[in-house]
Image 1 (cartoon, one colour):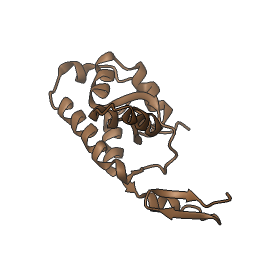
Image 2: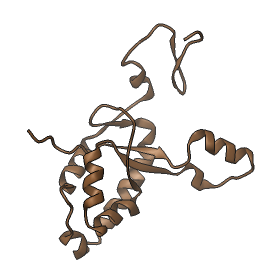
Image 3: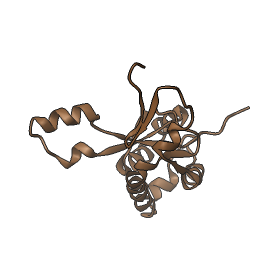
Length: 155
């Protein structure tokens, strides 16, 4: 049985937290250090885009997607609540690009990437809070903080 491609994606910082902190301590302050990029979780979505026509790849890249795979392990149809603003920015950019009604986009070879499935799954996706992610498993010595789950001392 052929599994449907999942189009769940995560917003991932372009510059990691530790690297960003290092640059900021050196006096480098640039708004671009806080930028995020969208990464699909399903490798098949990435492979389909990589093999699609350049017009399709550039459509997604221009909106803020990368052709790399996310390593986050969230439930299907869920995304991190704190990523909502950056998700909306990426999706807004994609929608504006699609509205141009460019014939090249309509006639392009999407190589199995389904824009309809992508849009339907993205619209159906729901946020999950850091606290909810912590409630999946409750281990002794795990405490909840304002920034998420942290292992207690001695663990």
